[in-house]
Length: 240
Image (cartoon, rainbow, N blue to C red; front, side):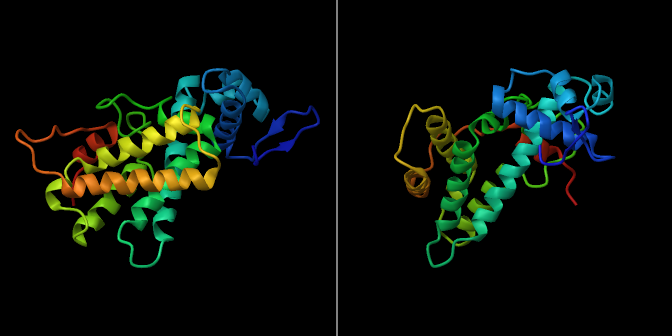
């Protein structure tokens, strides 16, 4: 859990004022050990060293704890992708988005159980929540993965390396490709030799997808407009 010390009874102990964070840490450890569904709120409470009634002050149910953990993991995904975008240098206009895709795939492979939580468990159905994996009324994620993807695609349009006509919905096309690769690799349905090979496969996926987007013709009728809980929240947010 990282934040706890030990009581004489051997149970974990949280820092005063940080019970919520300690419960999230315990839940994350349990997800790694048993998956999303193989544990209870009581078990998370026991690991921290408090009673379930104390945990209920922060989470009304196990599902609420799972949703909160899913949101935290999604935020970590976004921060990792944002940092990756800032690393590439040189004249390759697609390198930033390649790095974003590689960060997404690496996160899925390095911590698959927790990634599955972010990918699905606790995520709000489209249109019902205020963000991917976000319960109604919850604060927005500090940096949502979709925000990172949007920003990088907008940069490509501004630099002339993605046609403006291809931009609507391009975020969902790239997300579909990268997410599909991440899930296939994490579930063992597609195998590569090592993490370097996974990076290369992610690079090919992103570059090929961008090439197709850049050269696609405008269809009649237009492509459908996908949406997600995150894009619904963004559209509904007041604009300054």
